[in-house]
Every structure is written in structure tokens, then in C-alpha cells.
Length: 123
Image 1 (cartoon, one colour):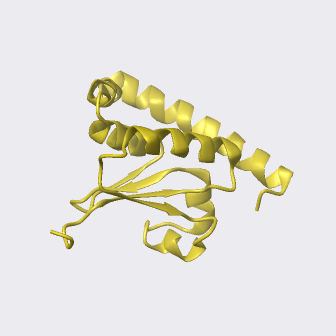
Image 2 (tube, one colour):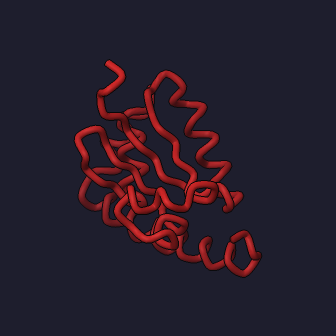
Image 3 (cartoon, helix red, strand yellow):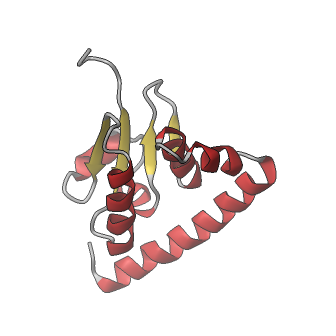
């Protein structure tokens, strides 16, 4: 039972916006068996996510139990799929037009947030 693969979430706690978002999400998923991996305190873990540290700092990464990798907006969609009461959000986010829009908006926001964090010296 303890050897079953878990969902792994790679996030950056040095970003105050990211940290708040993850804390909120974790609160909704207390019954879920998830490894929450902070690349700020464990930078070597970025390799596990299949990306370099700066990219994981910029965008949320999720590795599902089946080994599939989800980045950015798709990572949130994957989390919503497993969040009690949020599956409808995942279904909505997977609609073709919304999926493209979510990715576009997330990527723009994530890039700006990353640059803001760098200017503020958060890492």
C-alpha cells in the first residue's frame, strides 16, 4: 500500500502568490495522498519534475501517479480533477477553447509573476 505512486506537486514557496495558492489548494486536498515538493527548499527536486529549476519556479508542475507530467494550467487542471468538489472545474478547463485560453493566460501571468519575484529578490 505504501509503495503505490502518488501525485507529486512541485511548487515554489519563495513566491508569495504561489505559496498562498498552494496553501489554499493543500487545504482542499487534505484527504488526498500527495507529495507537495517545494523547489525553493529542495532545488534538486526540479530534476524529478523533468525541468530546470528556473522553469519549475515559474510554473507549477504535477506528476500524476501514472507518470504523466502536467505543467502550468494543465497542472492546475490535474489537481482540480483530484480535488473534492472541483472535478467540474477540471472538466470545464479541458474544453478545447477554454484549455487554450487557460494556457495562454496562465503562461502570461506566470512569466510576469516570475519576473516580479526575481526583481524583488525572492530567490
